Every structure is written in structure tokens, then in C-alpha cells.
Amino acid sequence: MALAQAIKYASNNDDSRTVQHAADLIFEIGLALGADSKRDDAGLPLGFLDEAAEIIERVADRIDNNGWSICPCGEEHGQSDADQRVPDVMRGDAELIRKIRAQADG
Ligand SMILES: [Zn+2]
Image (cartoon, rainbow, N blue to C red; front, side):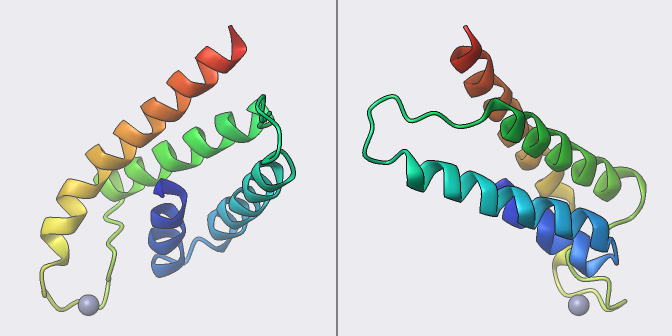
């Protein structure tokens, strides 16, 4: 899940606020899904989806523009490749979340 990826990046790049926020969202979304799992019209509070997409896009921007790395240890061991691929994947996930959200809204 893209939020877990966002947490990994944020924690490896000392952004504890984003870590906290994304972790809260995973918890809240998990809670909402769990509570509604017996119903067909499982309702996920749409605000959570907006927040998730925003966090994911923000982390993707940090990787692209602020040099965030999945491992900023200073030694190259393949993380540059990952850091190049991940932002696109994350933006794709954020886009998907926004699509789900738009459908749920309509
Ligand atoms: Zn490393």
C-alpha cells in the first residue's frame, strides 16, 4: 500500500509528522473497513481518501525534489533505482485513490 511506502520514506528522511499522519490514516482506514466489513455498502469516510492521496503525492514530490531516499545511508546499494521508480508508482496510486473517491462521491 502506498501509505506504507510513504511512511517508510518519511521515517527514513526524518519527517516524523508525515509518519504520524500516514500511520493515523492507515489505522483509521483499517478501522473503517473493519467496522463495515459485514455490510455491502462499506462506507469509507471520503476525507481519509483525500488525505491519503495528498500525503502520497507529497512524499512523491519530496523524493523527486528534496532528495528523499528509501535509504539515505550515503552508500549506493540499489536505492537510487528504487527512488527513481517509486514516485511514479506512488502518483499512480494517489490517482487511483482519487478515482475511487470520485466514484464514491458520485
Ligand atoms: Zn543504505
